[in-house]
Image (cartoon, rainbow, N blue to C red; front, side):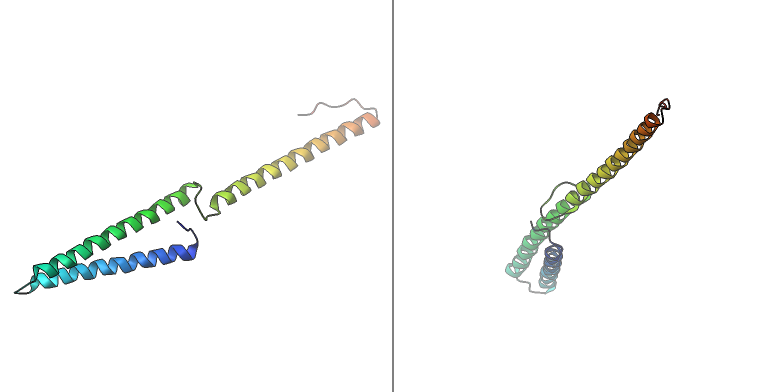
Length: 126
């Protein structure tokens, strides 16, 4: 399943068209049934078209729901950068933390060297 936004919108548009076809088929079946001399063959044809299209709608909606479930839970899925973006953001935070810690260690080292050069007794660091 392609995950490009345009493809997703097109898929939803197709689902909407199928729903319209379902409603039209159901309407035609009821219209035929409302006639004094209704054709059972026509009613069956419209009913079968309704059921077939309804099955397509159900399958396509299930695909859309599965896709949205993957996106919302952060599971890897085709075509989305969400999971990669999340991993990158976490790596960025780890990098910033590491930089902060290195700067802190550098500050402690410089303080220790300064204390040694001035012949002061090194202080204990927290």
